Length: 348
Image (cartoon, rainbow, N blue to C red):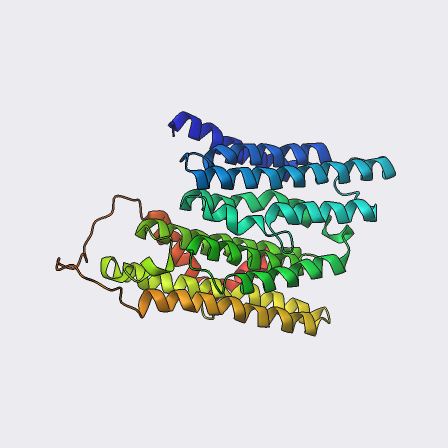
């Protein structure tokens, strides 16, 4: 892709998200979401592959449907209350419709069906943008309006997403689909606590972005998109393989890794709010997700790929890709747990 075109598209992505962050008017927020969608569509279709075009079409249709629902909900709310302000979402019908539209935008279950299919058709870097940057603007709107949305709806979306995110990833062999289901599960953890402690949602979002970036950049460095090819990575870069296994366990939420921090704090907050059954359900669904992360770790570190070549093992293969972002994200994805008190103090 032409670097000038790429610069314009990435600038538009940043502009759309910033516009939604800073707006207090419904139409401006909607406009930011639309700029975001239109900016990422050419990035998704840039390889001119049938799968990429199909993924772009599916993504565009779902995002357009969600945008139409947001416009309809905001118009209904303005009609009932006479106010276009985001903070004044007092009409129950409008707030439910609005939350449903945003759930469709970020891929919360049961509106998640587009997410794995779209992710499978993209290259790894565009998939990374879709999994991280594209979640920011809708989540900012949900945080602003969380207090006016029905708590039962939020709890249902959260529990359902963690359950589907764990269950759906069990039988997958494609790594992009597994990361899509991982994204759905993590969104569920953020939504479940958003009405009680929005700062925990932000902490969970930050750690999710760090861990997912580390996972995607690792797969890009090793040029891997299927579980079967994971087994060949250990001979090329043994150190990267071992850190990747730890990053995957961090995504699963095992202590003493960074991924344990948001889950621990969210379960603690749910228990404080008198919701032990919801907290127990969330902990059990995290175990389902942990199974497929362990499966990836097993394929990567404990199996050897069938090898028929007599060539020297490529231990010192040089890569031309920049490894600094990968190193930074991997270190933060593994070692932030001791910083929990500091992060909590900064967030509150």
